[in-house]
Length: 182
Image (tube, rainbow, N blue to C red; front, top):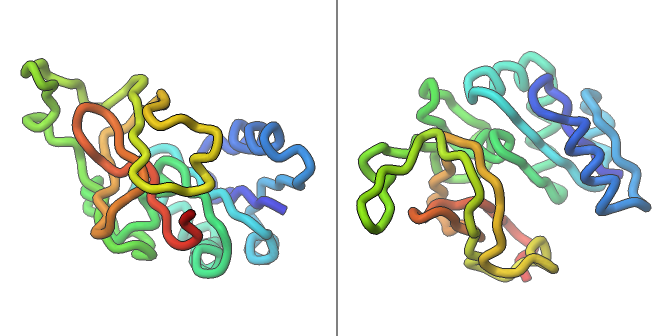
């Protein structure tokens, strides 16, 4: 079973529908039950909104320890702010994260957001960009290097170790993998 962590933030129904489409023979459940999250084979940890709010909702939901346990023992796909929450700290509200991965979440700096010809790039970053795959992983199976992905964000993870994909005219981690590469 794939459990989608419901701590009160995120577009859970869209995530569930996407998973049901790509894994039709696997049970997919949106869950706010720590026991169900611990029992799941795989976890999806979404997020939408502001980091301070997401961390507060996670703690108030009583799911923080279940997410920590899941991240230590099974495959976890963390999406958007869900990914950011796994790191040590975010510049958004100077918010501590779960510190499961070494690194921070930083805001795009306006002065660094320029194209090669000097044109200014907008923050928040919104739009389609090609993503370069920097490591081989089964998650990339069937996705060509340089494929287009849609982004809406003002912050990005800056892991101490290399991520697995990068995008835009500037480089930042789009996918962070731990274990099971290949």
